[in-house]
Length: 202
Picture 1 (cartoon, rainbow, N blue to C red):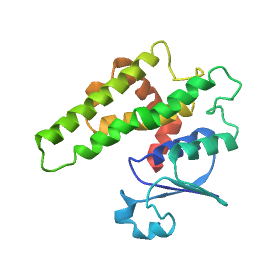
Picture 2: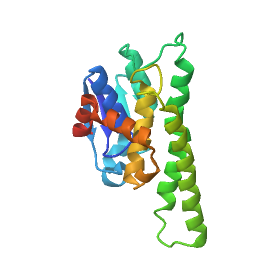
Picture 3: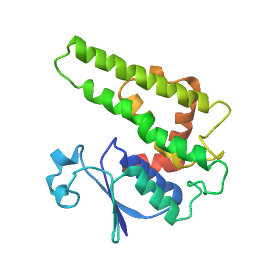
Picture 4: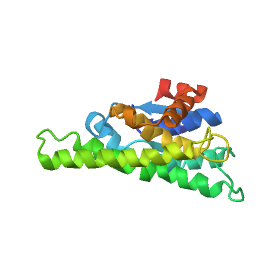
């Protein structure tokens, strides 16, 4: 059986959600966050100390969207848009938007907000990162006009990718940056039975 190492409120939720959507079985080993501090034995399994980690026989993967792609492709899931589908380019665009375009400024903001001794320079960094997040969310709001999902008219890995940074937006108290379409979109994703099952075990 496959094994997935996870921790609460991390990108591992993507992997567990995909497992639930495709009906694949895996042993979920959830650890306190961050594992590198609270689960030192995990370094023997994964030298980076990061989650998620998938072990499937000889296959070991540690990037959340690589794991999701591997699982969905292995099981022939429609979560992956085929190469001959005209929606394939947009599928790829929004899959990487979630992990790069949107996630990068969110990660930066998450880091600089933790600086204990605020200075004008730190405040400027926070404001700049927040503005970048707002700009990137406007792109999502535009894409969702007239759409329930980001590509191919159905749930795909593009939506799985974007779901985590939207979760992080809420964790950082930035919900006011979301437009109404993005709010409704995120609520639709979270309401899926597979997502709810994933939350229960992640």
